[in-house]
Amino acid sequence: MPTKIGNANLFSVPEISQSLNVTTVTVRNYIKKGYLKAQKLIGRWLITEEELKKFVNEFENNCHKRMKEMEKNYEKEIKEIMAGMECPRDFACCKLDLKPSCEIKDVGLENHLEITGACNHFCKYLVVSRGLGYCRCPLCVYLTKKLGHWDLFPGTKKFAIQKIFSSQQEQKTKGE
Image: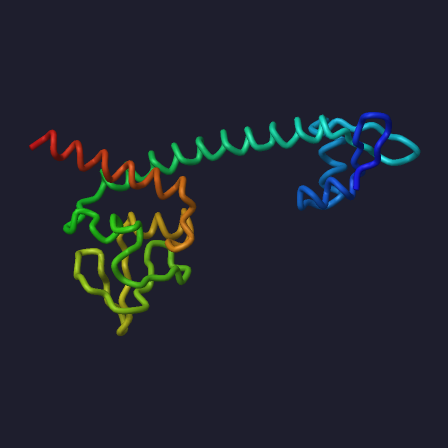
């Protein structure tokens, strides 16, 4: 609960750390680096509600900018991968909800994903070794390793990739 002095609500370091879900050390570092303006009063750092709102807004704006930059980088890298490969199935396994049509998992191999369940297609990127199936499609490998598990895809990444597929489809249509 904030301390009230006059009309101002003042928050302590522990209160801020709890509301931001960070450690008190992190909050003190924000203060030390000047990201969060605070005043020391009776041996305690106190932050006004106004300064806390400024900090949170600036933090959210910076996160949004970084996400946009990451999205552009992902989009560029995916376009480069797709331009450098010929997919016999026109990337069908990646287009549907951005999930591969077969069950795959990252098992730590640099350019391969293990096929763990039924695979309902065959393409030139499917490799069988010692009774195990592996997908070595550069796009599937990139999407799985770089962007994380398919089922946990954040919306911005999913949107960026869908945008790439739709723009490539438009280019093909115009070229025909």
